[in-house]
Image (cartoon, rainbow, N blue to C red; front, side, top):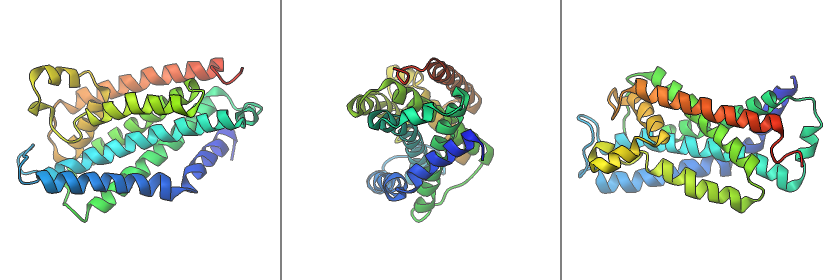
Length: 251
């Protein structure tokens, strides 16, 4: 293996060796949401025709888990290396900033998708899902995980201690994922809040992902693809600039 492949392998191995915490834990959390909300609202909420509320929940919960864990993987790896002081050994290697980017984001994508697949595997016991457009599912899963892995890379570079990273996750990532249509269709919201939801890029990731299962969505999947692609391009440019300049890692 060459340099970036070795770093990618190391990052994947890092979360895989504690899979009970990094994989099983998030899957269990998603299942608790599914059981509680599905049981309480199955007979009271109808979002799409011919789609039960529990089935509607599954893609949203899978994507929410995917996004949160992709972010957590890259951000936690960087902040742990900075706090423990072993990031200096990585800086001594001839790896370019592009290698860092591909390895950290690539490992985040792997973890996010593994968690998402785990949620689907367990949810198969509770409801039956259709797969109308599998290509859309795969595209939004990879793009969403890459976007959040890149955002986690930025957060990990910016944060200097764990509580700063926790604040970023609790006050930015968590609210944006919960308010992105995981548990509801934005058409059920008042007009003002529908407009606010359209400003949330997380909404487009989940709505486009859900389209792949049911063939219906709150907005056009092409619009969602454009927004997610543009957001990924923007955060990737920022992350690459920070890595190239050594932001908070060369001091």
